[in-house]
Amino acid sequence: MAYKYCTEDGNWENVTNLFGSTDYSSCYTPELTEMLEKLGSDYDTKRKLNIAINTGVIEVVGCLVSIISLIISLCIFIRHKGLLEQRFKIHMNLFVALSLQMFIKLILNIDKLDLFKTKKYHSNVTCLVDCNNQIRLVKDDDNWFFGIMYTPIICEGSQVVLEWSKTASFMWMYNEGVYLYRIIKSRVLRINSINFRMYLFGWGLPALMTSVWLLVTMVYYKKSSSVCWWGYSLLPFFWILEGPRMIIIVVNFIILIIVLRELLKKIKSKLSPSNELDIIRKVSKAAIALVPLLGITNFILVILPEPHSKSPELFAFWSYSAHILHSFQGLMVSILYCFMNKEIKKSFDKRMMLQKSRRNFEMEMT
Image (cartoon, rainbow, N blue to C red):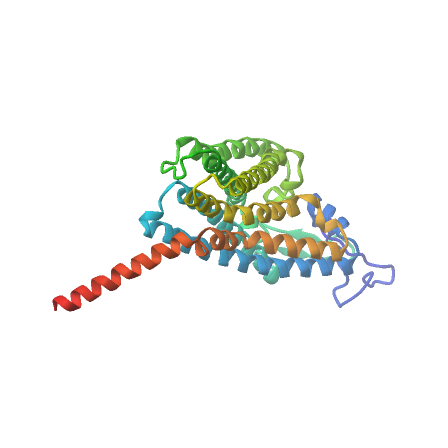
């Protein structure tokens, strides 16, 4: 129910227009009421809402750019068959996981921005007003808004796929680290078969973890009127997913330190053949840049719980830094693992040379 009050002289209380001032606060869900309390004053709330809309637009652009760059990278890997060794297969699986994650985030962010800007309500929502009685918000069903966020099952399903793909991205980053470690410790510099355990760890384990989290979350929200599992990432059992992700970041940092130490040892000893050092440098170069970058990005998302309850300045810093870094992850991965890769450039050059030779041969034959 929404309320407005009629004073003894027959006028509406807190009149701002001919229809009076209406209090819709009792129509809010408990989660929305709690969030509004944490946002602070009306001025702070408006500032934070504008920041959220601006970062939402940036995130849409970032996700779109990331998806395009990841798809281009995947096409390059598939097109050039000489690149289909284990290292590039691991890259491809990481790109697929990131593409899925970015696609879901893109759709959800467009949906949220559309809701913020248009505020689309169902036409069957009406408001009955009586000066001497309560105002009642009348609706024919429970879905007041259009969009994914207010569509049961589809919204929750989108969140599940998002979390699964996000966890898979972390696991494939771990596989990248394991491959680096194996290259450093082994004399075999090119391992051409990606084993089943990597696929199981990269896709199967995230599916199992997400299933456990899904069951616990469904039980928790079963009796709740919350829209689309509102605030699920702030619940303690979200650490079923977040805990292993943080562990993977730490493990990858440790692997990176080991790789750098071993690489320096090999360079100083000068006992390793130059081609071996070249391959190790080549394999580890992208990871040396990427692991800290992705680690910092994901730590930013975790270190500040409930950022909306902080000051507008701190909320702005968190929003812009976290969402820019996170949404452009796909672009950064594509640049480091594909667009700046010398092997891919060589493969392109060879392909161009072959095509040029073929054209010259055809011209000579004619």
